[in-house]
Every structure is written in structure tokens, then in C-alpha cells.
Length: 108
Image (cartoon, rainbow, N blue to C red; front, top):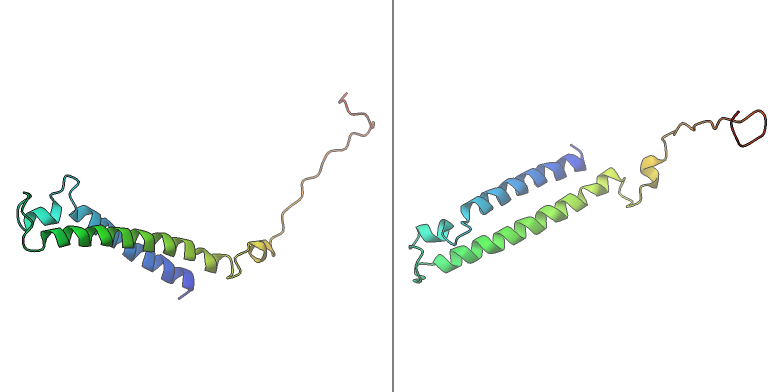
């Protein structure tokens, strides 16, 4: 199993978790926290802490996802950070430039 495959697997897992955490939240403040104690002004039973946990987990998972995506480029580039050795063995065909046999710049 290559390092790139491991990164892809981790990216998929983190992305799935991020989708789950975002779907649990409600944009109007209801979400998971309202199902534990009503959406009123009363904050009993750790409802505020549930909302804080969802906020922090969303930020943590999104930062982790971005970091994994950026780190997944290291195995592609060969671990050096420069793309030179990635493109080193490839032969790029050169296009021939047509030469005007008369030596003038304007076509006849």
C-alpha cells in the first residue's frame, strides 16, 4: 500500500466525518443542541457544551482535511517538494518550425 493510498483513505474518512458533523448542526441554532433541552434561553444539561463541541470539531476536521490534502502531494512529487524529478524522465516531442525556402518573412 503506497503512502498516497493511505492519504486518500484518511481524506475520505475525514471528509465523511466532516459531513456528518455539519449535518448534525442546524443553521438556525436548533440541531443536536435543541433536541437535548429545547431551543429556548435555558442552557441546562450541557446543551451549550454540545454546541461548542460541534463548532470545535467542525473547525478541527476542516483544518485536518486541508492539511491532509496538502500533505498528499508529497508522495506525488517524490518527497522533494520540487517537481523536477517528477518530470525528469518524460520526453516532450518538439514541434518542427516550418522554414520558408525563399528566405523572406512573408508567405507567397
